[in-house]
Length: 161
Image (cartoon, rainbow, N blue to C red):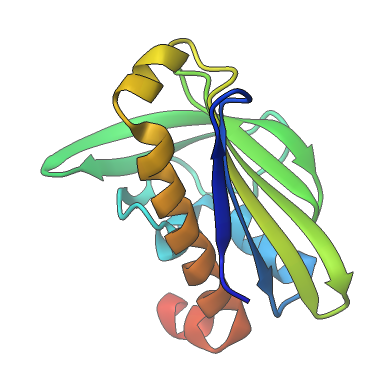
């Protein structure tokens, strides 16, 4: 199944979904480990963790090393939504959220939905003016493709060796 995405300007959300041939547990293990985020990040901005790499839970705080074009920076995040093996979302100081929802189809197949939600953002208008809904939707689609590649084959083991 190809990745399908849409932008809902009224709800202030860019969302894409992909059916992935892996269990929710296997996928969630990647999402809950900030040290692995760079392996599947479709924006190519995540460079690695800048804080202790502990499994994420509700309220967890973690920092990531990022790079926008040629400019490196560090961003702190807080997990603001969490349901083991089903839902995880985090936000940083801008208050917009990155959310992953996992819906089991059967024991070896999961529908994964990633959402860039700027309805909670401090400056939703600035996000829209800068074109981030469209930019982020393209990144989300690449992220879901990379996530599938990692959990459906031997790519995760090779990437972590």
